[in-house]
Length: 100
Image (tube, rainbow, N blue to C red; front, side, top):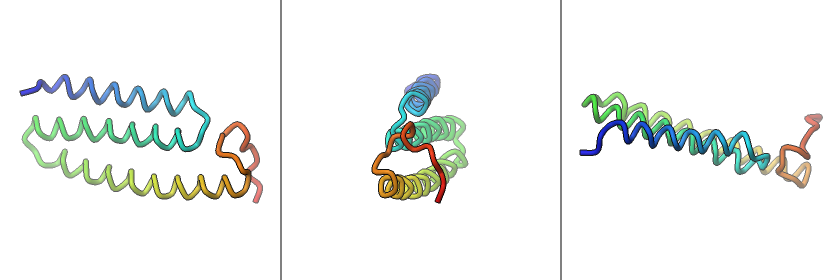
């Protein structure tokens, strides 16, 4: 059996990669993907802890996080489409104005 610490380190590494991608990149699509990576890191940790504690609560929380991730992806991608239609650009540096 794989030790719990390996799953926790994997979750930490995934979260760090997602956080770095979110902070370092200015492309909106890459930022959305980085948020998805961070949510998957949380899922990894929750599933590992749920298995280790032999409690189904961690696995139920994984399903809720997956639902939040799906909603975030749908709303985020619709905002990306609107940004592209309006500014012909999806980089955050060029999108400065929020006037309608």
